[in-house]
Length: 259
Length: 281
Image 1 (cartoon, one colour):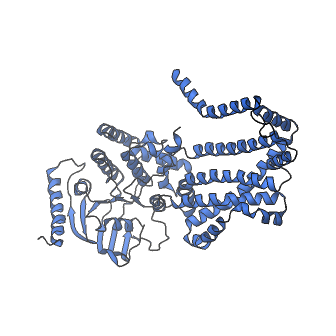
Image 2 (cartoon, chains in turn brown, red):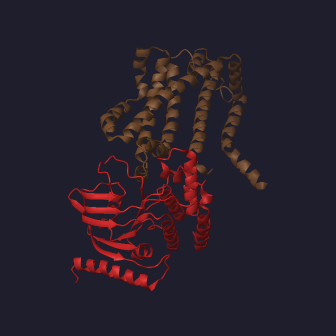
Image 3 (cartoon, chains in turn brown, cyan):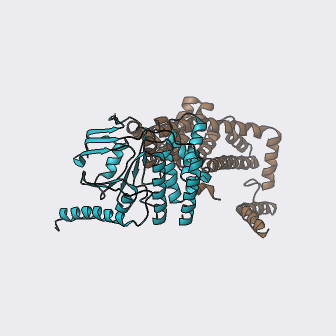
């Protein structure tokens, strides 16, 4: 019984620090230590959030931002995964494409924003292009590394036991590369939200970033803070989803089974 | 693993062996090597090996590290191709193109278990049945093979939770599940502790006697070679320098003085050669 209470307490422990910060923030605002025009109180931020939720504005913006994130991630991640797999399996393909890809990688993708606006205007393509470009590299690099680090002994065993090339990839290469691919996935998700924040604040007419920039024009600090928190929540949510997926897919690995 | 579990498992195997359907008639192979050579660049590993192995024989190949014994085994298993000469298995010339899939009737057991960590034990055994399309048949045959090595109850476990000896038994089940004609064993017991090793030797002898395949075991342990094999070949510097028949009755007892005598003779041969090449004689 005491053991269960102790483990509950332990589970609550990570939330202790944010809670203390939140409470002292509210107290400081109530006591007038913080100018509400600089940083509104948590209650004010929550109120702004409630307002935008009721007007339907929040949901619409979250929806469009999530859609951009998902489409950009799927395109960039898909291409990165395909190149990672191809270059990991074929030395010829790697010689041909890897150094070109590494050269492109060294251009900060956010530096392309002016060019992207010239190409695509402020339409959806611009945001999706930037997200896809940002996500491509972490997924590519980690898939390549994962495929490369598959135990060659297992590959030889698969060959000796008559596995065809397709079966070998499906049953040996992909599962072996999966832990590394997941690292790329989580890293790529971080970049997705980062890219989207920048792209939406600079060139957009909808989305959470736009919501924040729009609020800034009317000095609605509480809405700005609320938009920032929404970004944080969406990022955390996506990361948690991948962690759950990771634990399900890598159940065979004792490292992931514990906890 | 303890001796108790091993003896329990052996009892289990024997009890279970009776419940299994009669093994389907198999075609044990005769292996014939003629002038087989293998070199890697300028380095010649095998020089003109001529060898005949009658069907169903258990042959052990001993020799020091680097004498070419593992290379010979890889040639038999079709993982490498000879630089010169010909290998015939059951009258059928082993394919000489590099891309060709190895013969399904020849199975290789490696020094390490080489189980897929992301597949449960039974799925790992089913790897041996890659060319069997029907899932129910695969499942049934894999369960049979697991029962044969005394691991019927571990079919649903992940390889990570098995001991070293159990993993190697799963690997044995994987090699035997397709009922191969020739089983090539590349020091499969090298990494096991002494007691587990003895249990595994007994198990390998049991399944070999039950399934009548031809077996080629590569080992550096002369005692193990004499315990298991009908015939021990000594490989030195890429050549077969001794061919010793071990005519002891089976199942073999541990500590047989006759076995010790044969072991001594082979060791003398190996060590004298070494001494001579080093110039001390």
